[in-house]
Length: 113
Image 1 (cartoon, rainbow, N blue to C red):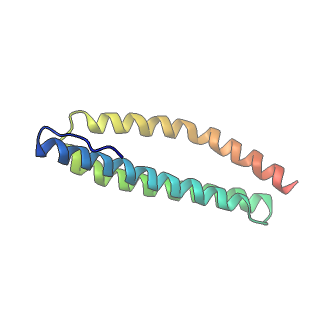
Image 2 (cartoon, one colour; image 1 turned 30 degrees about the horizontal axis):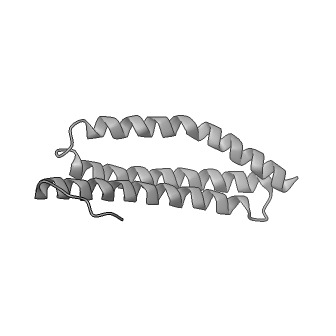
Image 3 (cartoon, rainbow, N blue to C red; image 1 turned 60 degrees about the horizontal axis):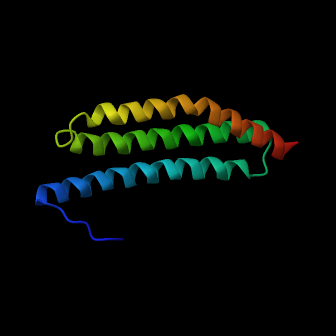
């Protein structure tokens, strides 16, 4: 990784906090996706797998939302319009959830048939 030049300690701190927020959000989302995928490859009945996958996705989403909200509260005063930008991204993700559920159901149907 290249060494970045910051023009103030405040800018450096701001960049580190922003990076930490992104890492936390990515980690939470990765955990949720990993949990959902692990349920897909279990040898249970299709309905059980779908229910478990849905529960895992909802729990992962809840955890990601909680983690993001905590980090957002810390950074809110430092970055203008941060909450609005994060809420916009969350809205985009929420719109994709039904499509992801359809894809999961399709994969489960393939694996269980």
